[in-house]
Image (cartoon, one colour):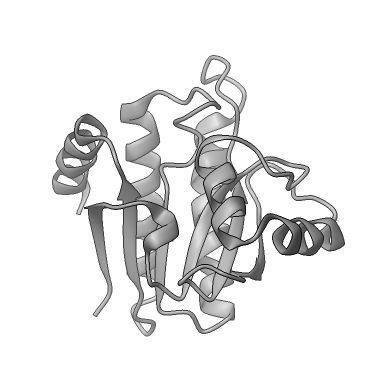
Length: 172
């Protein structure tokens, strides 16, 4: 049975079929979650795999091996940078989650770990980031009743977890 859960854990420690990297369009090693994933996966290998792909547009996702991570794969999802909410940010953020889940299903992956995409250095407001994240995941589950997937949001900050848990109760 499909589920959505929020855990206080580093995304690089999740033993899921895939974890999601909050990526940039160039698929370059960045800071925050992205930097941690590259470091723990093996920067050289992951950089080489990302360079072979060449990039990813905002709202889309691509997949690479997980290399040295417990997760078999890394799905690189590019969320939007927040400007003012009037530049398709909600639509693009929803799409980044949706495309990640579609890739997971296409690759027969039944567990996936997400960070809160765009809520860090991309500046997306916390409430809105959670709302779009959970909405996209919940919609995917409802639209794919024939496919079981365990979705885990890996978050380290207690305040961010509390907002997520409240949003999860409101939506699911």
